[in-house]
Image 1 (tube, rainbow, N blue to C red):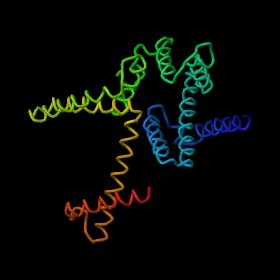
Image 2 (image 1 turned 90 degrees about the vertical axis):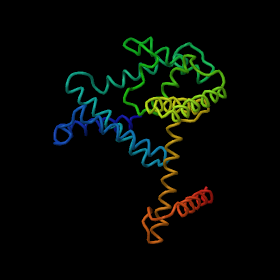
Image 3 (image 1 turned 180 degrees about the horizontal axis):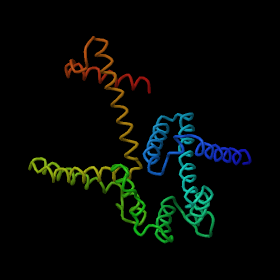
Image 4 (image 1 turned 120 degrees about the vertical axis):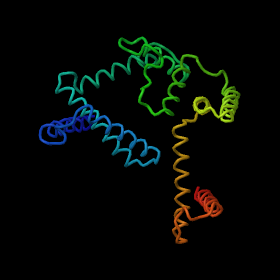
Length: 261
């Protein structure tokens, strides 16, 4: 613990020096750092998906720097400091875990999450709505998952996971109807409804749709890059390949993945 505290104190002192002496660090504001912080979160996300522990460690450090940086700038404006940030977090964790730090008993993870949402609404200055904690700027796919997850903790959910499939088929039928009718606005609306219920289906079966889609994105990219590689070996640009040649190389890439699994 002493070693950790010393390392953290050193980080705070380094940032003090940077804020005083480095032209770039002196110039930064909450607004200027915002987009960089978002970028750091995505870089951490990439490292986690790759299970690259050295990279995860590095990206966690970068994210910690941003937390300390924001607190430093707030301290300069007499708003709050890093100790206030940590203390507020400690108090929140204790308050929202009465089954650990109090006398309440829970029997499952679901009960923990349900209590968490109820306590957030009760907090002074907390969310006035179950959905109040969903950031508006979240990417739509992640936002849909978080919306569905949050309302499920207060009982707004399917009784059985398999019940969702009737809704999936219903939304697909409505989408197909609007496509045939040629109404673009209604088609877009129904496409959104279909995506929303598919995301819900993933959640009910323990699948995070963001992770699932990203894995598919990466799989597609690997296979298509194999096609590009084969085209290059043939002395062609990829758009000079026939669809039959592309399909052949695509299937080769699939077989290589199976052999390497």
